Image: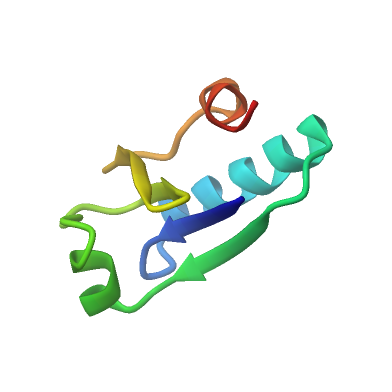
Length: 76
């Protein structure tokens, strides 16, 4: 599983990354978590508002940091 956290490094983007990492650890799964800061790469997914989370090339959330409960529902 590949999880991409999209965003330039703003506080909400950092919150999204921490939430994703916490959820993956809690679920006990193996996942590659990548922080994507390049706006051109982010735009390739049709994302123009950050933070965003993409799991296995599927956009899950845009424009807000997800809750841990949301992330857990996506990865389990």
